[in-house]
Length: 249
Image (cartoon, rainbow, N blue to C red; front, side, top):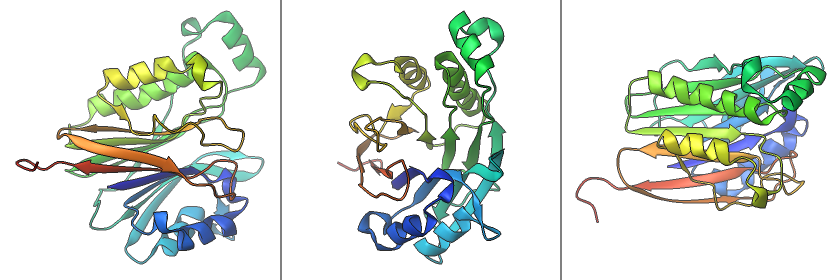
């Protein structure tokens, strides 16, 4: 199972995104593609253009979270038929923290810079559940609450053999300070393994903002990497899982 997550920056360089998807070999065997900041160009959803570039066996779903400077900004999921056969995907609103749950300094910041409307996409089949997430830019506790909204939704759904959470977590800050250990702790408590933990950079500023998490009933091996494609301010991030079948060594 190969997954890619990529914030394509409102498709400002959509031609470069599509060129990478068509020509870079790491996209050739892609099963799932989680896209953030997907928009609409010439009346067509970015996810539709990307799915077409990947090939005729790919399907897509895109949902708008908000209008940003007059342009649609949303999440999308693209999947390869045969690898994933979901029912109709759904958009989930990521709630804002209640006032009493954040520090006074963070609440002041949230009032000065109003939070953006964020969503997650959930797609399910009997074998797998996939979430495409995009957390807000501002706030520590605020972002944690958005991430935990996904965790709560996972807990409320029927359990499946494999659950994936992929997207832009906007975890700005020096990685050695571990400012985002609470998100990792929340993921761990939900049984999620961060497949991309070893990646140090997913953004042109050398920040690590993007991640892929997995929870599986069976044991699995995994690896992750990013590629240097300048089609967005984010780099495309890949994760690959090898899930062991019963009796296999």
